Amino acid sequence: AWGYLGGEGREGRLETSAALGGRYAVMEDIAAPRLRLQTPRPGRAVSLAEREWSAEARDGGSGVNVESVRFILDGRAFRGDYDPDENKIFLDLEWERLAPSEGEHALRIEVSDFAGNAAAEEFSFTVEP
Image (cartoon, rainbow, N blue to C red):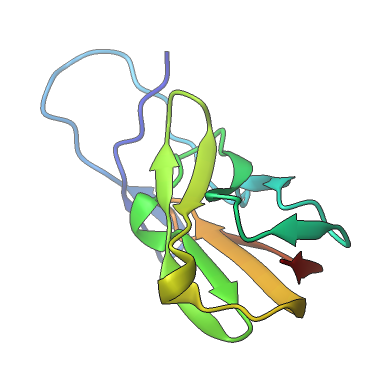
């Protein structure tokens, strides 16, 4: 299994350090995480009874950085969470905090990996009573 050690690119070189001896491969993570929306479904109506929004987030390099997970509802950003066992980013809904009114809304999901590669998905949905 591969593990991410981190590192920096300088003057055409990639540098990192390891605490233990062994065999290592030096690879640069240049690929952004892959996102696939799970809920709410784009263009669909959602109920105020829904309690979670989520997306599948996979990164084959340095891994998803939980500090980068953002759900942006109509321009207002909320920090999401990440479950690495399920490759899932999610936002537990507190409708009182989000305060979306009935009607159409825009949602953008953003995430990056530990190497700084970013991914985003944007779509609209409708809130029904």
